[in-house]
Length: 470
Image 1 (tube, rainbow, N blue to C red):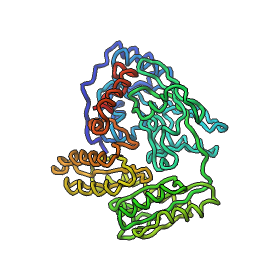
Image 2 (cartoon, helix red, strand yellow; image 1 turned 60 degrees about the vertical axis):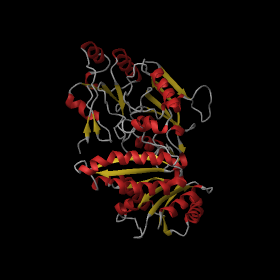
Image 3 (cartoon, one colour; image 1 turned 30 degrees about the horizontal axis):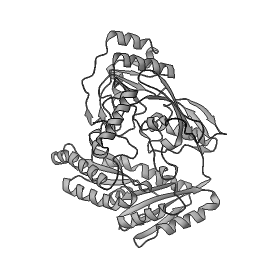
């Protein structure tokens, strides 16, 4: 499907001196100048598009330095990308210039079993990390829905998470250190190879989630965790949103933390209820998908404990699956929800807002009112264990009324989220799509200090310009 919109902001021309120097930095097959070749590197999953003037595919840290220094000297915008799975326009070169694709920097450099760590380049896919770690009995905690294709570099850039974050946390908490290149070509070595360390400022956590605006990551040291011996998946259906939320609170307040706790609202349930392995009563208003993991001998007690916490007067039924295949089908159905929404409407705004768990009913009630007010269907699902709800506005740009109402509806959603003590993004980032709303959440003094940090790392504003800040 073609991009929804194409845009670019007055690109600076690439002069002959720059191009001659650029060609000296890397072999010809890793420098793309033909617009037909560059076109594919101008989009991400936001379905916006801007064609870069050139694409470079570095192989080494030193090549990254040389290209970055050259761009900085000539003040050429430089946008770094992985596989373009982001939803907020973070990897779109909206000011032209170069796209630096990290797809060929895809080595797993080291797996240190004794110290439970892995060193990788940014172009390695999340799935490749999981597969390699699993050979030694480990896993890396971040598990975004696009894990089969998204890269570690993208996970780092946007602090990716996924269902397992409820127990194992996000990319920030599972990355020990980085090697990165600043705009002027300095090499930063951040973090440690131990799970504890407070020497100096925490530049690792600063760079993770900075969306490529501060430095270019060329290597990451990932913290590995032992694979659980066993897991079980439970589905619980409720007659009301409040009942489901009460269950979420109860589950998260007991001693056994689930490895995943997902929420589906009624429109989401309608999309999946006929899928194999799914049984949902017709009067279900909400469904929880719950996973527990640990030792095989602990599973009966874990199921009993979760079932007890999930019980209330709104519970319609609860089931658990002992079959690995059935559990895989359930999770495949959950991950298929987002693309399935394209069957309802050709256009969607996919937001990943977060509110305190107890405020989920108020959020969903408010979303229903906004949907009715603006005539925009809204489907909600997501990571209920930490209040991270994916709010999907479905509309058709060929429908004049919906086309006009979509953005006012989105503004109303962000105001609702902030009124409920929430935040605009849990894992997708800001990019271009939310940059004009960031002032609603972050006060001007804090925003000014963030801009000062950006200027310190990137004085000529070449690294992913036009993102994050309004």
